[in-house]
Structures are given as structure tokens and as C-alpha cells.
Image (cartoon, rainbow, N blue to C red; front, side):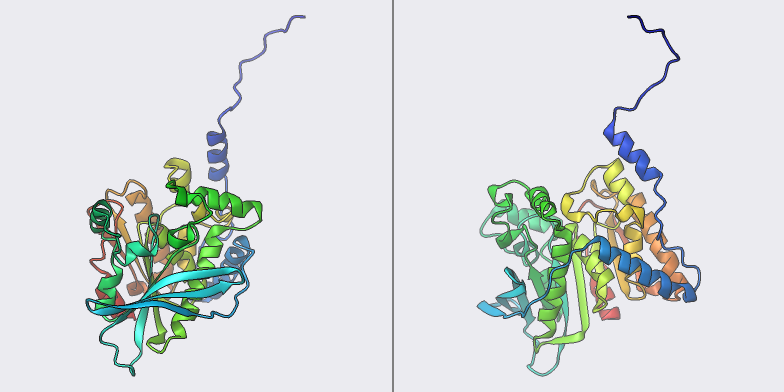
Length: 351
């Protein structure tokens, strides 16, 4: 049997190109195009509800039932290790740093200092367990910003996200490999999303903080580098109790991050998000509250031009709302690290 030659044509075999083209054809149906203050509430409510639905299911909170596990004096603050319940069958271990200046009467502002990939809460409070190479890494990334914030007068909370630190057991991360992918795979098999679970736990951290006598419930902030920036961004977008957010090394374009660079993990993804919006739209939900974004010019994971573009998109909304001064983009010369040069003044101004 012979086949007559026909006109030449090609068929795509690349899954990457297939998905990239699908992404380029996606319209982002709820992207923020607010041009007047009057349009803002309707867009905010619609996109916030869509984001909440995309991240579902959400756990059900349970009584915190906090436990104090240890307490020790440090330079300029008292460090407590606490444990509290988030949902049934899931507890959160955390460090709480209480400034020495606390007098038992005046309530202080509080900061959640959220870690990224690494050793969990130990990183943000500067615990290296005698490992000199890890200590050098913390110093190079300026990752141990929790104690500095406590010495400046903030009650600091640093929790282990699910799959990190003391909560890595059973996720395959405790084997020495980066187990965040496997944790997400296991969660997906059950219809869950680890990003949602960790954002929920961060919200429960706020519940815990405002239950403490040292904390002013009207002055809660959140800050984080990398995956800590991810959790800060989404938590601040969905929980208005966060008055100030500092997102370091994260705000970008999802297209650039995933389809161009291919540099992310499953724990940072909201399924279906690009059909409705992008990270800049998530950041717009923080308005009119204060948002400081940090970006390194040499960050290999987060393109500086994509970061600038995302912040400009958010800035248009802040300008429409007449609160342009509450958004700032701190661009520094350096790589994927915490810089913090503008953070103290920003927190003092807006908290």
C-alpha cells in the first residue's frame, strides 16, 4: 500500500510549548483594571472570592490550646517556644520573641517573620545548631531578621510551615531532599493544597498572637523571603488583620516564573489562578494597606524586570485609591536574599 505525498506540515510534540501557548492565550478574566475608586469594592470582592474558592478546601479552625514548651533569656528579648493547634490533628510549633522593653502594661506591635525553603523557623531566629556552614548561609542571606525585629520592639512569631523544620517528618523532606514537591503531591491526591494549608496556619498565628497580652491586635505585620514572601503575599491578601506586609524575593509574573524560568515548587501554586489573575492581582487585594516589596537585581530565581512590572501594576491601583505612598519597591544590588534596608522605617511609619 502506498501513501501519496501530501503538503508538508508540522505537529507540535513539545508539552512545554503546548502549555506556554495555552498560557499566552489565557485572558486573566478578573485581572485588576480598576480605574476609579468606585470600581474598587466590586473588583476586590469578586477577585477575593475567586481566590478563596481556587484555594479551597480550607481547614476548619479548632481551639488553639497553646502550650509553652521552653523559655530562655536572649540578648534584648525573651525567646519562647510554643505549640498551638491549628485544625484538628494538626499543631503548629513556633518561636515567640518578646522584647525586653515589654513592661506588662503597654501592648506592642507584632510581626510574623516567615521562613522560606530551608530549616524552617530556626532560620528566621538565627538558630544554626552549631553548624558553621549553615550559620554562614544565614548571614549571607541575612535570613535571621527575627531577633533584630524583636530588639526593635516587635513581638516576633516564627512558625514552621507544613513540610519544614519540625513539621518535615513524613514529607520526605526529612530525608535530606527538598520534599516540598512530594508534600504537595500527597496533598493533591487528597484534594488539598499545601499553600492553602500554610496560609491557613499563618492566619492561625494571628489568632494566637492577638490572644497574648503583649500584642496590640491592631498592629500586626507579616514579612518573609522567598516562600516566606509567598505566604506573606497570600495571607495579607486574604486577611485584613495584617496591616503591613513586606514581601522579599517573590512578587513577579507567574508566566516569567514558571513558563520562562521554570523555577518554583508545587507549594507555591494556586491551581487555575492564571485563568483569573496573576500575583500582581493578589497583591492588589492588600490595598489600601501598606506593602513593601524587595527585589534583588541579580536574583537568579525572580527576574528584576518582571518584578518591576508587577509592582507597577499594583501601583496603578494604589494611585487610583489615592494611597500611592503605601506601596514601595526596594530594589537592591544583590541576589536572592533578604535586604531589609527600608523595612524598619517602613514598619515604624505604617504600624
